[in-house]
Image 1 (cartoon, rainbow, N blue to C red):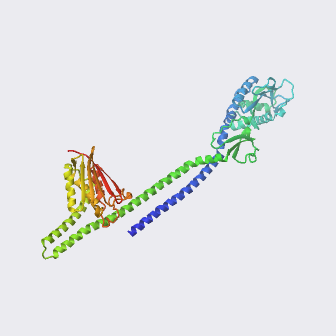
Image 2: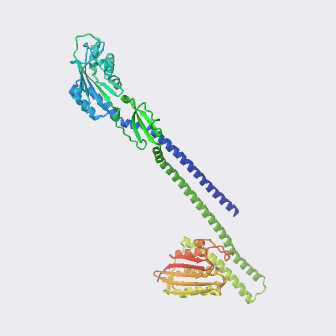
Image 3: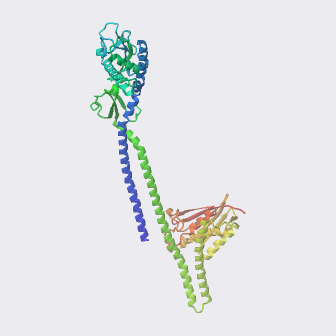
Length: 557
């Protein structure tokens, strides 16, 4: 036993150590998980601003890539009326376009006083028109070449830059080839601060014609029409689309030189520069620290839940191991006690039988009285051995369900009184009272029912003081059941023991049980009652006695 106890103590120590280890691991995992969630949210705060910018600039990119190139479809045949319609559509569709300038340009080899000239190629304009939403009547036409005015193209930097690029392209043109998108963007677009100027892309054969006008002296050429449009932009009209409201509380458009440190030092912030015509501006993103902490906690919650769930599973496994270990320990103790007690119970009658046999063997002649005495001893001890073997065998048969109920119609008063008489003959000092009410006959298995009575009557006698060897048996029919009540005036049972007395091999330790019992009597009793489809309960008080109540189904034959 000492070796086994030591092994159990070691097992308990290992379980507790493992529990402490996984608890420490839980704390470490929760801390690491929180740090990972925090870094993830911080990374999101930095990187997802690109998605906000792209979503916000979708109208601008559509305007730049799809709407502006539509000017080329007119092939220079835009006039003030069609240009006004085109500009009106742009102004109402794209709120960030504040004003549109339309250059009604002409390309020729004529000498011009105002415009752009490269070698023999000239680019001039017939008129310049300004369009905006609800313009004044006198603010649309800025310049016409048939009217004197102070306007000069030498001061329009966008016109000159795009004209210069166009002439360089014409000079390099050798054959009729299509222009790549990269060449078109570099030549026919001029993107400056809050402004995009675009020249309609001519056909390849027109470029060959313009090159001839540039390099060769000829008579005056016709005037070839070309359209140039400038779009003045207002970046503060861009609608900011915040599709990550869980990260960004505040998003605003700021000058690129804006520094938030002095104005909003308590905010977590980041920014991203806008491209193209809005290069002097940036999108500024900011959130309060508590707002970011809430986002971190939302990210951390699933991680913490997962870690805690795994921890709880491990704890449940540990508790099951601990419970199993405790059950095994108790089972081992019960088995150990059973072996000791059972050995003692067998050893005692065997020893008595051996002593009686030796006495008979050594005696040359036995008197009648001695023969009766030794016969009684041998008979009683053989009965004890037989009773032990029958209990073990019957219990095994009950558990394996290898026996069947054999019903017989019993006269309860006669049947029970015979059992009582046998006990009173065996124990003359045993007082047993019987009372039967509302029932005369009862159908049951006489052998199994007798085993129940024998065990309960024997227990009542064994666990009673010398002065209180009393038992009351009350039998009554209760509708479809029969109640059997056994009330003694014995030593009683502790409340803490009541749940254990029907367990196999369990013994209550007291002065009446020092010589041992195998702990099978009440367990066998309960197995019999359950097998007979009944129930058994007990009430007891220390020093006052116990009351066993059995309910069996009433069956008539």
